[in-house]
Image (cartoon, rainbow, N blue to C red; front, side):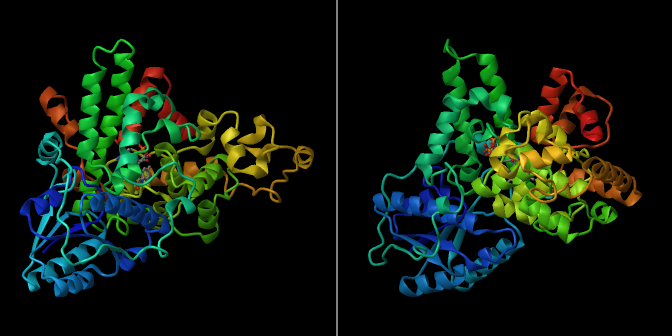
Length: 532
Ligand SMILES: Cc1cc2nc3c(=O)[nH]c(=O)nc-3n(C[C@H](O)[C@H](O)[C@H](O)COP(=O)(O)OP(=O)(O)OC[C@H]3O[C@@H](n4cnc5c(N)ncnc54)[C@H](O)[C@@H]3O)c2cc1C
């Protein structure tokens, strides 16, 4: 028989390994494995596995409706394969390639060894835009684009039923419903995923750029596709091709303002493209959760763990109202927008000078959409340890005033501050003693004092970050990082316009789009950032 092993590709549409197995006409077992080894990793939480199992169950229902036999098992993949092999000898294993951290590579090596030892052919198909075996990025864009424009695989209408193996789900009563862990509007399965995609390209794009950085409005205005793409319920190619279709449909529709439509959809498309760029980075550096891609720079920064700072940051009890509101909202819902994620990590790295590995693991565990490739790339960037991205140390006060001027988001998530008048909501410690008494918000009693002086600590962090980048060995390593991982988009543009070659600095998707908006608005965001 053949086994189709589903990992983070929990869909039946645009699934090459599934189509390949079905076309063989041989008996098939569809397998998903809930792996205890994965659950023990420091970046993995019950939320991740609950969300994934919910999607595996939805997939199982779809496959069983088409006649398929599906097993959702708990255990070590090679042990489960051995057991199945004893029942009905396997000839082929079909799956997508998985880009993950070191433990998943080691597991895949064990599976490859098991296949070799048992004479089983393992057909691994490429996943999204990630290209295995590349040494640098010179050919990557072209290879990725070719994949994105190829036709999606259609979902099979029917699949073979295994003649004597039964469908089972060992996770019932073991893995909870993800909605019992966080308050989320996300429902599992392909139908729900396409619902979010369709509603975004048909209606919700209107508010995308204007509201995605506001933590109160972004839960509805942002596409919310990340958790579906992370678990492979949607492929990146499906998203890209749906966007192209929407572009065609919008043309000639008098009700659509094409300039607005293009601006919003292009911004969204560019983020989706950056996704594969970052996952490709992890594909080439599997230890990004423990080691910086620029170890010389990381070592020069000498960040240190101060337990009290870490706990205040992780619990959302720093004494900075907007930061605490963001952390508490993330804990309760499993999602927060890009800008707030960037701020949270940058506060840990620059203002509190905490080591990025621990804070990165904490954030990873809280995100329902955890995708190691994007996550660790962003943790590196927001901590200033790549050497190829600009130093960006977010000011909490500036973000608070920009995105929650009236303090409503703060009052929702930090109820201790609900009686604080608006002029003081961003810095409640500036209230007089008598005002603290009358509002029932005594700082240091009902709500913590700021853990450090933000302005001063952030300034010191920025200074230290620039100083570390000046070391000769750091500069040399930064050039190597750019050559191996930097986006080639800018480099090609420079060559074609024959502009003088400047220092290699890679932009990141959201901030480069924001730079565009800021330039248009005529403000000086960078100066604001440095000065707070
Ligand atoms: C510290 C930090 C950690 C992050 N960790 C993750 C993570 O674990 N998983 C994750 O999916 N995103 C992560 N992001 C990127 C981004 O914040 C989320 O993708 C986004 O907020 C998800 O919401 P959305 O689907 O509505 O995004 P949209 O803005 O609607 O974007 C559409 C899609 O594009 C991709 N995307 C968006 N932003 C980025 C980006 N900066 N880089 C690469 N791809 C992007 C995602 O797949 C997303 O679903 C992280 C960002 C930061 C700063």
